[in-house]
Length: 113
Length: 111
Image (cartoon, rainbow over all chains, first blue to last red):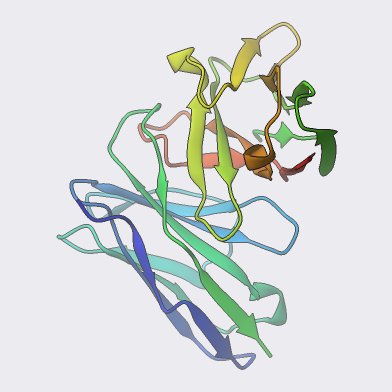
C-alpha cells in the first residue's frame, strides 16, 4: 500500500503565472481534498473531488480549479498567481464516510515572487 | 460557517506533567471531530476522532456538546509528544477528508 504523494516538493513562480500541483492518492481511496496552509495557520479547505467530480468547495476564487482522474490521482491548478498564494498546498485522500481518516501528503511549497 | 478555535498557539509543559490542548467548535448539528498531529518533518496524521472514543498514545478527547468543546488531554506528557496539534471538524458531506481546521497549538514538552 502506497501513501499519498505530491509533486513537486517545492516550486517558485512569478506573479501572474499559472501552476499545476499533482497528487497521487493512497491506494483504494476515491476521495481527494486540497488544502492551502499559510505560514502559522491551519490548513484551509480548497475543494474536494469524489469519483472525478467536484464535491464541495471552500472560500477560494474560481482561478483555483482541480481535476480528479479515473485512477483517483488529482491536480490543483491555480491561474493568475498572486503573492498571497504563497503557501504549503496539501492533498488528502480518504475513503467515503464522514468519519473516514484523511491521509495527507507531504505538501508542495509554492512561493510566488 | 463552521469554525474551530484553538485559543493557544503555544503550550509548554514539563515531562510528566498533565497537558490539555483546548478546542472549541461552532455548533451545527452533529459534529464530527478529530485531532490531527504533525511531528517535526513528518506529514499531518490523524491522532484520534471522537466517534472512536479511544486513547491513542495516552491521549484522550471528550466531546462536550454543552460547551461545544473537544479538548485533548494526556495525564503525563512525554518529550516525544512535542508536535503541532490541530483540532478539526468534519463537514456534513460524505467524506471525512473535508475538514475545517483550527490554527493549531504547538506543544513543547521540556525534559
